[in-house]
Image 1 (tube, helix red, strand yellow):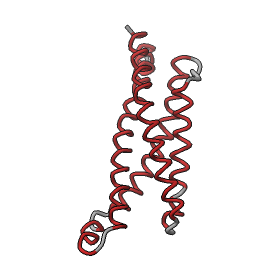
Image 2 (cartoon, helix red, strand yellow; image 1 turned 90 degrees about the horizontal axis):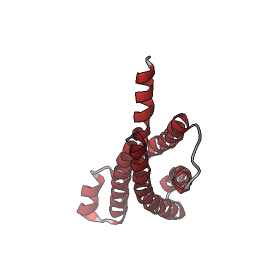
Image 3 (cartoon, one colour; image 1 turned 90 degrees about the vertical axis):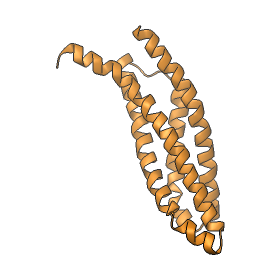
Length: 157
């Protein structure tokens, strides 16, 4: 590969993480919607419950959550790798620390699945609380991440 192509890959690799994370934020919100539908289904009665069950919200939520867990971990590691490759160091700042915390939160949230499947309400409430915190941090990360992207673009100009 030519050094020009390698440099181009190095520069554009910095934008893969922000794009992935914006997509994951949208998917996270949709997974939250599916989770809300699961609660509606659980609390519904009669024909309403039968109609909601057809939506298979529990299966869709579980599958989407698994994808989110995998992509968030990969996205976090990839972002740190791209930063290191491009800068020769990691910048220990609130964006990095909150991102690492979010990776831990989503892992903890996913780890509650077996307990929720056994009907433990403490696991459901913990799962919901962890994910509400996660969404709040995700929104904050979106703002600080765009500031970082702007800094990268300014350095390129």
